[in-house]
Length: 423
Image (cartoon, rainbow, N blue to C red):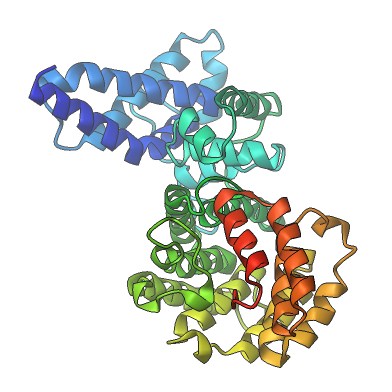
């Protein structure tokens, strides 16, 4: 391969990674099947790999790929025996690239948004939504998704294939829901992006504490969604939360990759640009909420993250406000994990005994039975009250529950040295 060909190939791969979601979304509008649309997008990629080394990289490579994929989609529809029915459904002419559909009542008309809602449809399992979203919208290969979630590649491949088949079998329309249905459907979309980010921010298993690429994919999707749904406060709330959480990434691990907890982080390494972006997104979320409406759970969590971001040092943290925000979060989105986090905030605002009482009330909750952070938090609170032997046992139990090697090592160290402040 010549240097020119190598560069052309690199350009194809880079452009496709950036543009693949929009290409798949645009083609899906024509063929109404995300599986077929992805195959056509891949065909356009192959065409570019064949032609660009000879003809050179076009001035607008993304537009070239989109036009090639759309023409192939139209050719495919033309060859169908049921072409007349397909033509009536999508309202396209044979000769022209499909024009945009008329905008809906509230002005949202974007193929990418349609693709987000399709990939995150509630008819799919949570695992399938995550895999399909990373494949279609994140541009990740099946192998990359499998490595990110420490799953066998064949398992992830089957998950994606079944998801596409399910969408086709159930006749899921390629559209953005409106009215009450949108409110119900937006939740699963936000949840998928949030779960992808969380897996990158604190990996559940494996040898690495962080997987920054997953955080970046989720953050990009959150920004896209907030940009497309300017009137949805929780879209801005999620974007704000992820911007603020991502701002700490560089400080969350040491040179050896070991976790660095909040109290020990070098705040000079926090990304001030991401903090500014997060605060601005939080302001948009609050403004979009409207008078008399309560803040949503992602917006409240973003407000908690903003409290941490505003504190110059750990000692400056406004724990009373954070505890109050957790009270609010527990009221609108109750869960055992929220209660556990609230207990930590209360312990900082009112003392470890107050937090320990809340944690002990969660001890028998089935949802937390195998959750390693319950004994971890309890161990820290016991250590802060001077009950070191009990703290050691809790840290050891937490170490036995986690599947992340870095976190296990940290918890075993706390079991050996429980007096060390791990907040």
